[in-house]
Image (cartoon, rainbow, N blue to C red; front, top):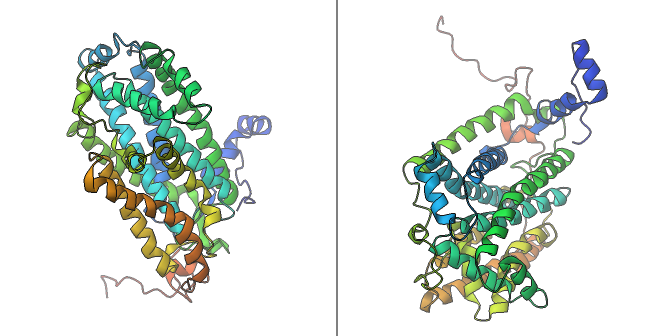
Amino acid sequence: MSGHGNTYVPKSALAKWFESRLPLIGLVHSSFVSFPVPRNLNYFWTFGAILIAMLVSQIVTGVWLAMHYDPSAANAFNSVEHIMRDVNYGWLLRYMHANGASMFFVAVYVHIFRALYYGSYKAPREVLYILGVIIYLLMMATAFLGYTLPWGQMSFWGATVITNILAAIPVVGDTIQSLLWGGYSVGNPTLNRFFSLHYLLPFMITGVVILHIWALHVTGQNNPAGIPIKSGKDAVAFTPYATIKDVFASVVFFAFFAYWIFYQPNYLGHADNYVPANPAVTPAHIVPEWYFLPFYAILRAVPDKLGGVILMFSAVLILALAPWLDTSRVRSCNYRPIYRQFFWLFVVVCVVLGWLGAKPPEGGYVIAARICTAYYFLHFLLVMPLVGLFETPKALPGSILETVTGPGKQVGGSGMPVGAAAAPSSKG
């Protein structure tokens, strides 16, 4: 896949001169125009483009909001209200940024589950997949830091809880906590640090995304069948085939995004964050944003503080081990009937953990969280290795072309199966 040639030929003398000194247009052409992609990709493969669009949206709105935000404990809350009330279209920028974080995680969770279902982490895509996990970790850090910036009640106490959790890490925990606090408790220096890091991390994410795309163009894209491209008929050019699909899916996703901005802008937030931070009053229930709730449930499922911290971080890091824990030689769950059932059970467990993370840590909620936490880790440590050894997968298709046209059919120059019935003529 990485060996596909550059078909760009500059036409004008200026283009030839520029290309001979900086082959930028040729690089873009070979990567996003002539790059071959499997012809059987479905709409789950459009979420990569959606995530890039969301990253751009978050950076643009974030930079604009930073021009009006005051990162001080005394003025942060009022500066957010100033953005909402006094800055031209400030309410729109703020709602786009706040709800954009949620939409970003909606897209990334679909992207992750798609990779797990279709085995996109398997060789030779291990580095590509691990870079994706790194992006996810950076996203989580960026989202948490951004959640603290309004300096409302939930922001303040969320920062307090998380920084206290970090103190449980042996040897370095107290040092990390002191560096983040900038003093003896969460306060003005903490907010300054969080704002600086929140502004910096999206650009780090952009750098890793570039590496992620680079790795993708070296190994090529996976596909729903999980088999490699074997001939030119298995693939189509990235443009226009994949780009049209990506643009259409992005438009649909942004329409969904617009619904939350204009009709439910505060639904995914917390009412306590519209109350200024008060260190003397603790909220009845301290809960993070919805996209952190599964990991928050895992943290609270363990009675030991250090044990909970270890499991919470391990729940993310274990994703990076999937290429080596999965022993099956078949990538796609479409051809793995037994493992497919376990995969959907895993998805249900993740959703239930999210629901439990929003509940108080008491009674049956804690018991259910412990059961779901146990299965979460057993899925990677037990199910993936054992099912791959004993499962008998279905027969794989002979080529990607077969998954589109059916076995034994050929594709003509128009891209239609040879021998396909023509549409009836109106003239008879």
